[in-house]
Length: 412
Image: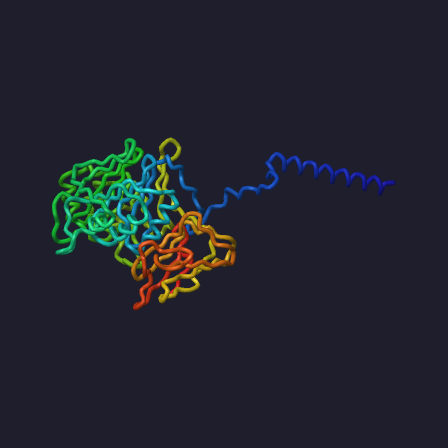
């Protein structure tokens, strides 16, 4: 009898524990049918591999400092319209287009080209051939290589446009109350076109952002003489990739930014993001684009508070370049994963810097392949404006990117 009572007591205790556990589970909120529990919010994301960030709604103002390598490109969204300051190199266009795809840009209201060097203007021709662009701006003071036309003028003319020349003192409205004021150049420098850089004082949602192009000491001095402490800013996109021939102590003191952005790739330019420059801004937030993925995104949240994040986005596509046939000027793309949406994916011919972008709605079946040919070829897709995208006499590496500029495959 005693053993039977002990068994009953144990069974009763077990049932009580089960009921308490169920009540605690219900109080914490079990996932609904078909849903999964949220990840532990106390676990921090790795700084090297930030979690994907959904792009803000199209009504938000923002600025994206794009990682275009040892080059410069900045995408601005203001009152729903898109503007660019510089376009990187011709080689970095996939990264620029990836950033624009992330933000949902389908057209560009204006492009500001700071000066004539290829790491700032090199992507302009490709941009103009793939996006509707309303206006191309450059400084009225410029000194490209002797006997050469300004490359911004050439690219614009090829696209059937004329550049609009800007002078110091002008202010361009970029939607709502946001503006881009031209601070420089103030005088022509015939020694280095870096010191003829278009310098913009951008006002975006109440935040002041100074975009310095490749301005060096000589142009800095002219701006300090003209504006003095009026150069103070919230965010400084540092001049000339943070090289030691730019950003003097007086300029750093006058601007006194909270955040400094340096656009570079230190594996290519080992002198950039120079220690002397970094030391000038000790204690400030310093963002170097080669430490980012797509780039650094400045957006406005919580009643206008600015937030800067390192953003990334991936498609998970398993595409590869199976073959490049230079005789037929055809590339074969194979899908080693499930059905793939090719919209916005990019095929790049490295030798000539030609870029093919897959059209919206392009789909490739699981395990399937498709061909991309020159514009006169018989491929599943034809490369607009390029009869022979692949160089037949020299090595021409093929690169395949997803729509966010992530390299999927390369074929030598």
